[in-house]
Length: 163
View 1 (cartoon, rainbow, N blue to C red):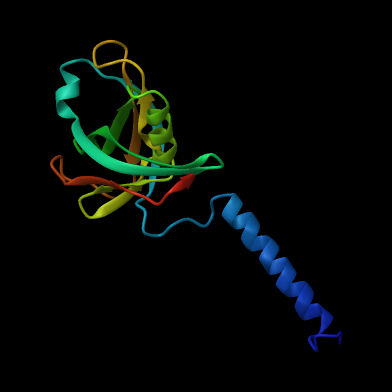
View 2 (view 1 turned 90 degrees about the vertical axis):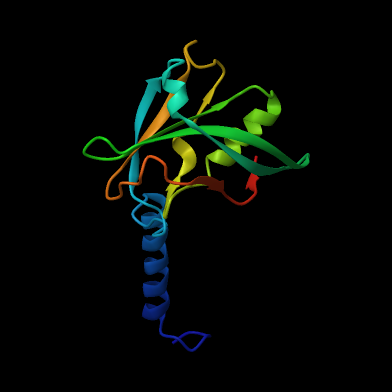
């Protein structure tokens, strides 16, 4: 027994459990159960005709830095494609507002995209400095278990993030 009244082995066991939990979180073995399972599959070239299949998803973002808190509005462009064996989501954010768009991109790395009833990490949405048909590449994610409709409602949500 030690000063706290707990056996030494109990304290060591608790410490080992805490260490294992930290390892599991850092390796991604434990994840947000409210998120649909997805994986990043790369980028796709977006032509002017393909851009018509993408829907505008306006969002408000907030980034906190040592210089202060920054807020703004931007618009991501997202396409839902359930035509294959697994549904694919593709999206881009046009970097047309300078540093403001960079902060919006930072916010997207921790945001969630709501597609109908499911939520997906929005980290696949790629920043783009060129327009459709001019070398624009959209980032894409594949969904494992869910297959939302092409016209499912889209929205972005998230908390303020640190810069």
